[in-house]
Length: 315
Image (cartoon, rainbow, N blue to C red):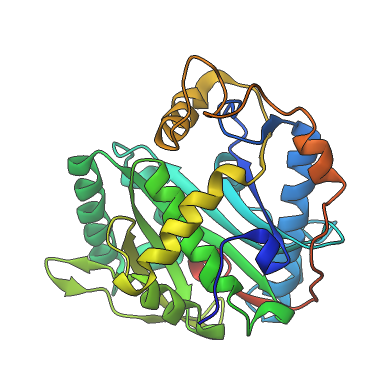
């Protein structure tokens, strides 16, 4: 398989949106730019809305007046975006990271239909609580993946795999993560997650079975992942993605101090000196980074339509 985390080789560009409460000045190529953060997030929400609507996963009434699929977690999560030569967001995934002491009731999945199911709800909650305890014991993040959308023209490329490998890399850089994703069998999303290292959610050794979601008209699986234990086949590519991440532009929506420890931990992991406020080997921050991103440095174009995965088919 021909796969690379180098955006120049892929012909497209990754952009990371940091949570709005985070200050990303210690992450290479980071800039606090609320208007640009908002613009890119809006574009990702429109991509999700268009694709999910085409696939019948949501109704038009679930979109905003400007055709966005907006979810409560969006402003509190990281987003990994793929941007094309025209500045359009052509793929996206939401990375909602929780401190390991988070309560089940504070997770997005707690509000999902599957947890209210008479047949599976109790089993799902017990399985997630088991994963939370594991994250606490290891002192790592608990991550909910969702909001995954990939443009139709990229369906038969390595884009979906590359996105998930970069999610593993991001998790490793940040100190490790145990994660959960509600994945649809549509467009092979769940099989891609399984291939890289996702496993069925379990409680007391018993797997949570796949289920058909009547509201979203698709077969779903709850898959867990551990960033420290991917499929060995992909280990080299994850290392490549880790090496590439410090060069990925990061756009932060707010200069608030509440997320500073998160970003300092990330910066320390990639080897930059804390005191200097910029990564090793740089004399200072390049203030032209985000303006150059905003002019969209030669990305490859992509088309419309797409595949996706996420909680209840649309998350």
